[in-house]
Amino acid sequence: MSALFSAFQAAVREYHRVMREFLLALAALAAPAAAQTIPAVPPAAAPSASAVWDPVGPYITAGQNEPGYRTWYLADPLHAAQVKAFNDYLVSAEVGGILPTWQLLRTATSWKDCGGQPFEVPPSTEWPHMVQTLRYVRDYVVPAVGPVEAVSVYRNPQLNVCAGGAPESAHKMDSAIDMVPLTPIDRVSMMRKLCGPHSEHGAAYNAGLGFYAYMRFHIDSMKYRRWNMDPAVAAECPPIVHPDDAASIGQPLPPLAPVQAPGSPPVVTPPSQQQPQTPSPKP
Image (cartoon, rainbow, N blue to C red; front, side, top):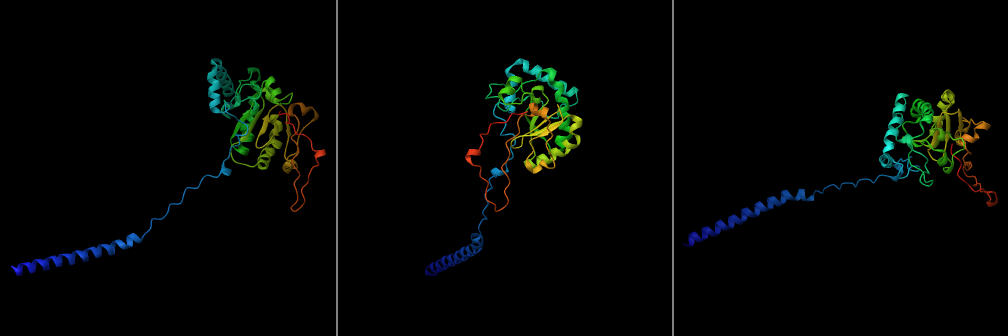
């Protein structure tokens, strides 16, 4: 009996020895894996605000954007028929689709302040004036600066006065389009790209070319003229303005501050010489 008990104890000791060796082997295998670390995933970089290109934003408010157009379109049953007739006319003149038709119905940027409509179909008697303007946009504006968006087109006489338009503004005759480039570009480069073709081909189209604050520029087909170039491009792209053009282009923009040479002291205008700035009329 004692022999059987001794054999049982020996079997138990052997079992524990085997299990210890087995567990030690498992620990040795697990140690390298435990030492490894999962590489940290770098956080996604937030988009830079400076990378956002929104040239339309300074000019278009809620109500004059595309959802606003749909609201205006549905507000009056007459609008559908008027828009269709205008669009059909542009298509028949082979200038349909150069710019979206709904953009060509945008009125003044200050429509809300003036109590006007954000969109308006011009009188049909004025439609022919838009044809040559769109041809010039197709032939020499889009090839120069890429796609553009119209921000102000037809302004009825009352809205033109309230918006500060020139007395004989081409906007009143549905000949003018104020627009901005949709491809990122700086203001001086935009002027250079537009002025070259205008110098070479503008007269054949009776094209007027004007520049306003930020990236907004004006094209019409009433008379060959050019205004409001920045000093940086004035030598290569001089103004073309005759005395009888004043009523159609309004007053020039206030002059820019002089460019200072590196290290020179800033030029300060004495308060007695400073003039109050008022918005200049828009053609």
